[in-house]
Amino acid sequence: MRLVLHPKVYSDIAQIMEYYEQVASVDLADEFYAELQQLIREAAERPESFAIRERDIRRANLRRFPYHFLFRMTSDAVRILVVRHHRREPLLGMGRR
Image (cartoon, rainbow, N blue to C red):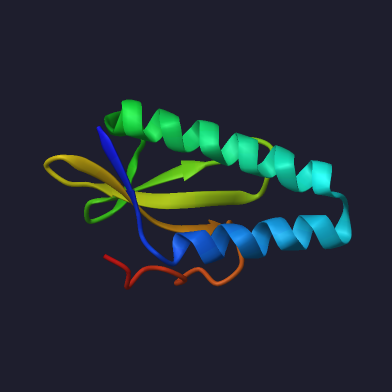
């Protein structure tokens, strides 16, 4: 399936990577990004394997890091809406379409 990222997802990712670079290392930020990319590919390849959390929004949890992303399926694409921490700002990105 085609993959579409909401424009604010790029800043979500940049903020998370900047945080890991500041508190740990560039290597840890790169590891976060690699895991995120892999999970996004999995969601694009088999979106139905992720549970629906609310209405038509699905959630994909990173394994190593306390982050997840929310996405929805359209007729021809998987649309990533937000990348966020498991516990911080629980409503972040819920208004994104």
